[in-house]
Image (tube, rainbow, N blue to C red; front, top):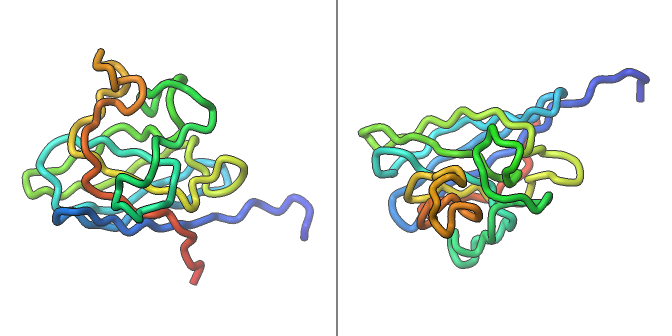
Length: 162
């Protein structure tokens, strides 16, 4: 290997499905600067805000309910993506338009595709309700953002470089 070689771009994909008509696909691209970009489209949602998180387990044997809690390797409270105190998997909300379609475009440093805290093999989950970003005062605010039921999810897998 050459000295001074730049890190390669790493790519992943998640196909989203749910018990209802929720479906979509998300592409994850981690650039050499360590920021992971998430882009894609999810359809079949009710219009409005939906909590959007990385969950700890890539297990969908019981639908989205078996994906475990939010990915939280540093044992922090739930928060907004811009907060210092947040789970690594706290990605805030996505917005579905009147047609039930959410166009996703997020960049985040806490969801790497490589290294000790990689999100590969974990799940991305879309919730029924808005994430209160840990500030809602509800008993679930500091753990889940009180984002409600899991309406869609998908396992994050390595994407072919071809």
